[in-house]
Amino acid sequence: MSALTLKIATHLASQAITAGRTISAAPLTIAVLDSGGHLITLQREDGASLLRPQIAIGKAWGAIALGKGSRLLALDAQQRPAFIAALNSLGQGSVVPAPGGVLIRNQEGVVLGAIGISGDTSDIDEQCAITAIEGVGLLADAGVSA
Image (tube, rainbow, N blue to C red; front, top):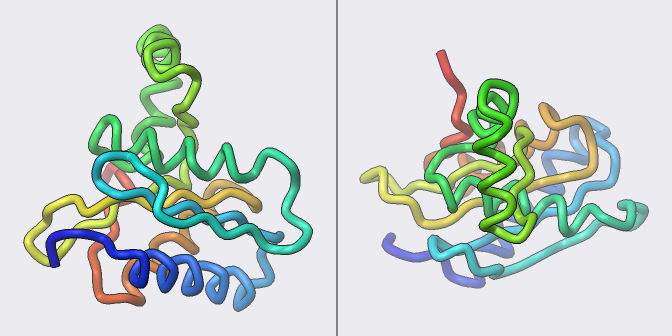
């Protein structure tokens, strides 16, 4: 696979919602972006709060913009706050450096896009994103440093 289609993106969002319901997560909002950072689909569960779409997009957009999962962006925010501030200035405030933005890779490791989830704790958001990506047979890159 070389690109995310609308069909795959909506399947990813559906898988993420299923993952969230399985673990009784708070209402989630899921954004799927292509490799250029363009929104393919956005789904917001009933009861998700007001800014969740912007946060989900920001998590995914940050991952695409820097080519690493937003967990690593969160570490950057702690270790290099001036860099993240500059990045947000350049990106017009579009980067949310918190876990929950996960790169979507094909079997060859090529970045197809990213999924961003917001609604529960960042760790739960990230878990649902990884479950969704792996559930459709793609590789999840959350930026986990080992």
